[in-house]
Length: 112
Image 1: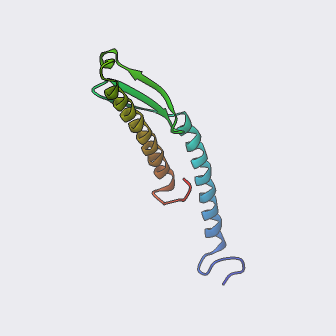
Image 2: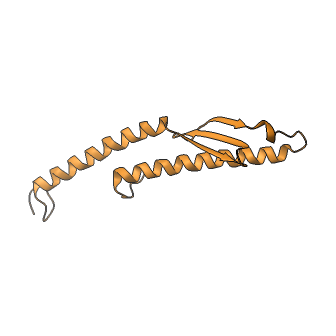
Image 3: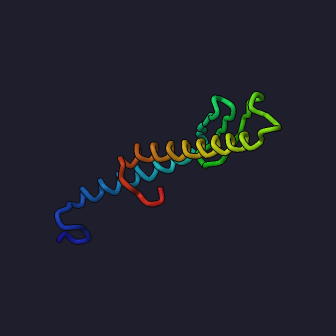
């Protein structure tokens, strides 16, 4: 076994692997910053309620169509808002996972 190395791996291969890991780490940090600024939108109820969330999974806006505001049916409006919020957060999570796979090549890296 080579001193300080792994069997069957030359020093050049290890250095190249370390450079790739460092590049991946920098790419992931940049992607996370970019995703924090990214916005995803979900609309439910045929346009009745629209919710926008960011990459930090924070809801940043909710829009409600005047047509859906019925004081007699607050329960329906609450359900639509809940559905829109959950859908926008799901889309934010999907976007993050999709961008992460582009960088990691599909490797499962804990914490990311």
